Image 1 (tube, rainbow, N blue to C red):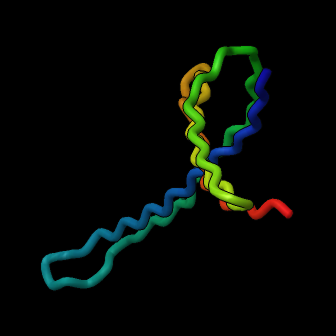
Image 2: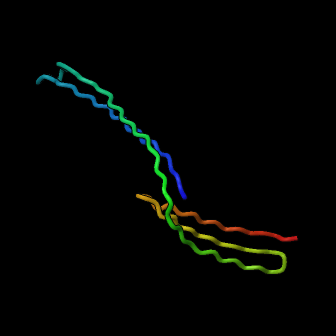
Image 3: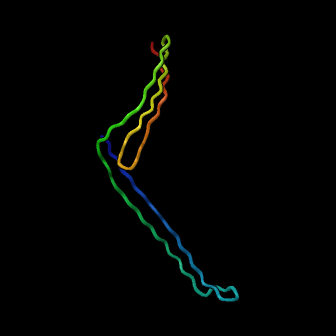
Length: 86
């Protein structure tokens, strides 16, 4: 099972100036436009990955890579571990 939350923000600044033939500003206009979107997604999908481990005396070395299948996203997780057992 998985669940995500997201927030998107956009901000636009628009400036306009009208000049005459001599380069003088006759009129100007400025506007600031903002837009935002929030949402949540959840579901239950399969995930797959590979795990490799190697042990020598008291030391262990492991490598893992997992890929999660979600609606429009495909996040992944990679980890490398070094362990000493006593």
